[in-house]
Amino acid sequence: MKRDFEALTESKFDLLVCGGGIYGAWTAYDAALRGLKVALVEQGDWAGATSSASSKLIHGGLRYLESYDFKLVKKALTERDMLLQAAPHRVWPLRFGVPVYAYSRISRLQLKAGLILYDLLAGSPLAQMKHRYFNRITFAQRFSTLAQDGLCGGFTYADAQTDDGRLVLELVAGAMEAGAVCINQCQLVALNELDGKVNSATVQDKLSGEHRDIQARAVVNATGQWLTKSAISSDWCRLSKGIHLILPATQSDEALLLTAQSDGRVFFMIPWYGLTLVGTTDTDYHGDIEHVAVEKADVDYLLREVNQYLKTQWTERDVIGRYAGVRVLRQSDAANPSAVSRDWELKTAANGVFYSVGGKITSAREDASVIVDAVCAQLGIEILCRSNGRLFPWAPHDFAAWSATIVERAHKLGIEADSSKWLIRRHGKRASEILRDVEKDSLLAARIVPTLPFIYADLLYCAREEMVVYLEDLLRRRMPLLILARLQESELLQIAEKVAAILGWDEARVKQEVADLQYC
Image 1: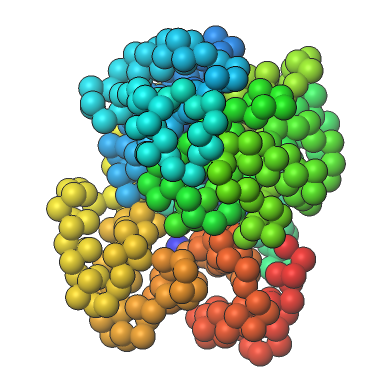
Image 2: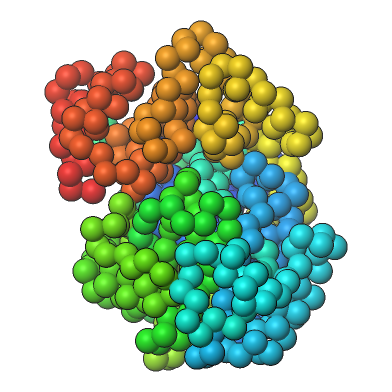
């Protein structure tokens, strides 16, 4: 993935996509696969906002059954199962436990009915994806961190997990392989009209300051929370903030779905890179969309609610990392944002620009295919969607056999099993290239942080191949060390020096990059 701003002015595009989150990435990829000449621009980094601040789940949304949003759940479950097949390195099964206590808001029978319906909507023939019930003793043994007072038993059911930032990155890479021009740190300045219809856009390279006009027959705005800054689209959106905490490891390979006792909303405890991800909150947001912060009240809420279920209580001192994101919801009069549907809609302005509003990471591919259908109709061409069920750009053809070979090869190179597992999940078939780097230099097999599975070969590969501009790009989205470890300034400086030659940084730039991270 190489950044080439000049490529934006080399020809006229069929489609300009603005916004490099999950919806922009899927739209660009889907359109490029259909043979359209596509440009994708992102004002910051790929997945730089909400799309790297999710719960890292590919799921149907069990809680949406309670609001009878069956259509949304069915759509998301269909996409979940497709992604498990098309991207086994990128999306992997994750089993969830749901405890039933004597005081639970939803009874055992109600939960049983919901899980039966969830399985039916999924329609998956795989037994391992079906729900199961466990009595009190067996459930307590399986989820040993849970408090047992009042525990009556519990269910498990299956969904799936991903690394959201890397999911977006792979789609952008796939779009580029299919012929799209994709540029990060490239800001939309203006949309230009001819006879009342947009026919070009002015963009600015944020690195050089240069302005260029891009000729485009169609434009899609998939900028997420920045829709609220536009007079055209601001009335279509409602913003909701969600925060997540990174806490010490608990369950190694299973998650928990829990219900907040104070307000009845659902939250998760999820294993992620060997630690525990807890979230999310769901509160209306009216603040600065450029700087979405984790507030103390958010942290207090999550810790209070999760501690209601745990034998050993967590405090704020246990919080390793934290992050916040803003969801875009369709405008609604509902008092609580949790009651607003997560479904998506496509709006079209009078000047012909398409606006993507709302949605979920899980169902973004299907929604993007609808966007590209509308673009094709506007352009007067008929090309069917080619993204549904297509093997992902970095997915090997025989995943089981290929991954076994990679694990064995990594073991011989001195790479620990946990690190090789995450190399596969992070890079897919490109993991072979990283192992070749280790073959040339065995020191690259070492972990960057002893408690986390990332190795130096992975770090250098990301810096070299994944359109990194700033140190934050590398350590937050390519490799989320900033939220998974409490890195000291000296450690950050050491990492920056490791990648300086690759990224063309001199000593002053290295120090500036480290200093800038203090404000992230």
